[in-house]
Image (cartoon, rainbow, N blue to C red; front, side, top):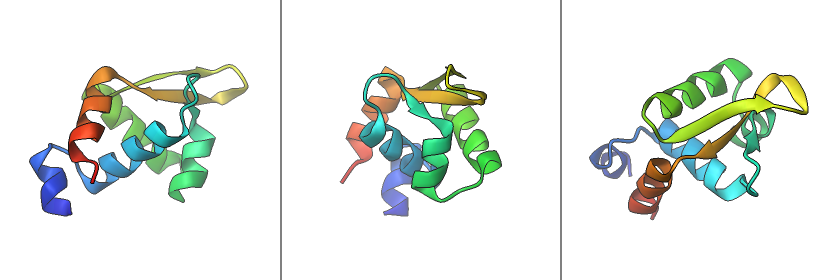
Length: 88
């Protein structure tokens, strides 16, 4: 599985975050705290993953209007394509 992800330019961490966002986003973005719960990771680790996805053009992050300390994340079209190519 890891070799498949690398073939698409994804780490397993990238893929798990993209898959969670794809599954959980109802159109308004996924709250960072929800990603933390879903992935079982700390806020710092989730922040690093979100930042990496944003830098690669795979996701967009905006401030969460319901949580001043958090953000909402949604997939960019490139992130959706990466997910569709790599998803089993």
